[in-house]
Image (tube, rainbow, N blue to C red; front, side, top):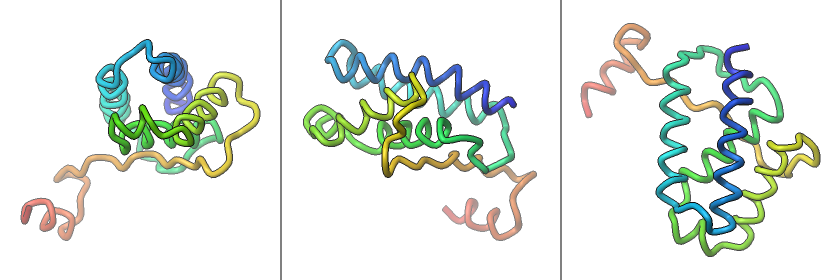
Length: 127
């Protein structure tokens, strides 16, 4: 239930900012900061279930990934990418006409010494 409430709350904020970005009414840095804030807030929830709860959540995480993955120039200039972002935002607003090929996964939790295996600890400390 905690994850569902999070997705519902952050979806409204995310779609509002994505739509503004697509209309050139908000900067890339604002959008980028929002993505980092969402990821940080998600980490603070400490959700242990890695299974996505709904199509809405899949689209939400897909949109977060796309905004994080692509650079400013690509997000500003790629017409197909911009249409895809708009379709995802529209779905999150109305939950109808799910965009095709937009499947997102929950981000991995941070590894801590308390929850990691010995092998994970070795990997983290060797970097």
